[in-house]
Image 1 (spheres, rainbow, N blue to C red):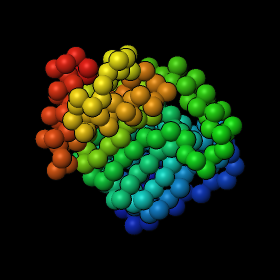
Image 2 (cartoon, rainbow, N blue to C red; image 1 turned 180 degrees about the vertical axis):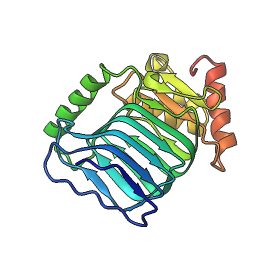
Image 3 (spheres, one colour; image 1 turned 90 degrees about the vertical axis):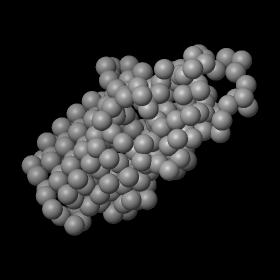
Image 4 (cartoon, helix red, strand yellow; image 1 turned 135 degrees about the vertical axis):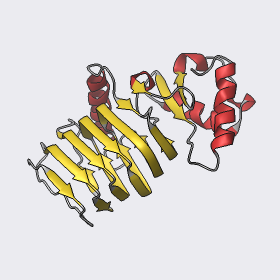
Length: 225
């Protein structure tokens, strides 16, 4: 599928059949996606979104599964409800502007069987070996964001409010000594297949001061960067 631009659409539907779907060379401006599901039960990362820009679009309750994002720029994204990426790979994805709603990067979901999840996990790990940087969020302000299934050292970030956690610091650490938000981030890191993770204190959240305080404590103890 090749297209150039969609603009000012109230509803956009992408439907491309086959496991090797590629969406590329596309610009989306002020489009709305409602309850969309992009991806399939495919463990080979053959679904690709490449060379795409997204500006001022709305994603309402959307899920993405097993997709490789390559050279994607997203600005002023509005998420209503949630925007969830399951078992995806990001390469040169830039996210900027205010991001209301909940954005999550999760491991493969339970709808994949155990064998398929294992193959996809291996494909994701192999893919990130070839990525110099995955995601740039240094210019983004979040309401709620969870980056647990993304190598933290491959994330370009604002070090003031976006903290790098490394799994090596968890050895012998008693999580009970920390605040609830810090405990949640450290527990997610412990379960991650990657050696690092970025934890964000979301500036647009009412809980920002509490989350920031917990993460800043970790930084003062040498447990976050």
